[in-house]
Length: 158
Image (cartoon, rainbow, N blue to C red; front, side):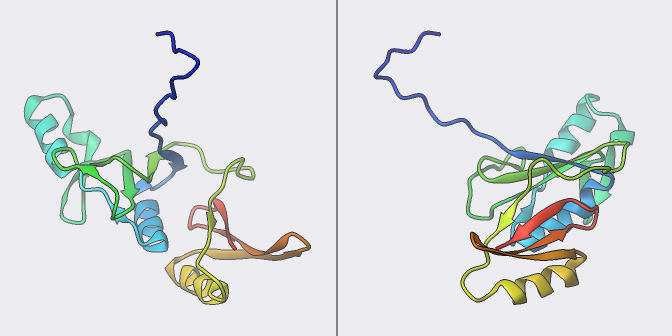
């Protein structure tokens, strides 16, 4: 498809995919950390099981409902989502099971911005959820706290 110079392309829809040993535990952590919602894909999972398009071993029970075994997402509660499939259409983090453990520093990370004067309280809240504080950074460009989620993925609280 060729675009004319004056045509503005539509923005791309995206999600951030994060490798995980336990995607469901990571989804619970990040949903609580971000005040997001864990997606409910149970209707889709059940439909795929009924059609024979998904084997039973590819599913788990999660919070009392059918879920995919190897992936689950969290979404911003105010963003639109496909009610039939339970899949978010806006800001999302998708956690996918991988066999290998995290071994090196992230090449991509989240920066959380709790608001003016709220960093210390937010760091303590995240620690209660299972995060670890790695270090405090004070530079001429700003101050932030580097943290790790329960599986060791780094992120910052600014």
